[in-house]
Image (cartoon, rainbow, N blue to C red; front, side, top):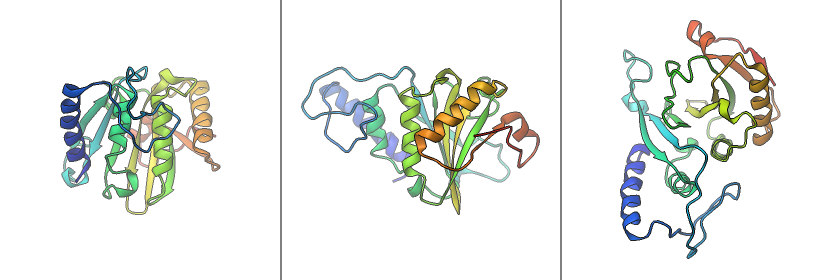
Amino acid sequence: MGVEENLKSLSTKEEENKNRNPNLKEEGDYDTTLPSPKKGIMEQPHQPEHLWTFWFDNPSAKSKHATWGSSMRAIYTFSTVEQFWSLYNNIHHPSKLAVGADFHCFKYKIEPKWEDPVCANGGKWSVTFHRGKSDRCWLYTLLALIGEQFRYGDEICGAVVNVRGRQEKIALWTKNATNETAQISIGKQWKELLGHKETIGFIFHEDAKRERGAKNRYTV
């Protein structure tokens, strides 16, 4: 079952669960970075500061002649930590996605496109992994986003994992590329959260639009 089918199924199940008891949580395998459900305990859902939306660009729907991003779809917006874990534990992680897939998690109402007004003047930090090796860092990145762990959290737009034949790349998108202080802080903090030792670079979206293989403006 693909990402879109999984999320549609989960959406249906969630509506059914709401009719039964909206606050009852089930047992599962959870990371302790964010509050996790405990069996049989009745309590209010944990709500992050922002709503977040998962977007999926299905490689089978892409066409060489289509406009970039035209096959991208917003597939689920979650508003609680419990919803996040339900989604995360029931969809494919990057190592299981098809080659060519792009999976995004962005703040609600921000589209993961250069053309989006919030993203237009921004840029991105990127980390590259061998094929099948980005799952842990993808989860850590999502937890950092949802848990508002960045000192310059208002600068964050979202994150994307790109799955390709020989590698996977996670990119962290930000709003104001020229705000060097904020970007350097975000890059350093992200590296620390991931436990990444190698140098990473920041590319301005404006540079990437003008030329393929744009150079890094910042590195940490």
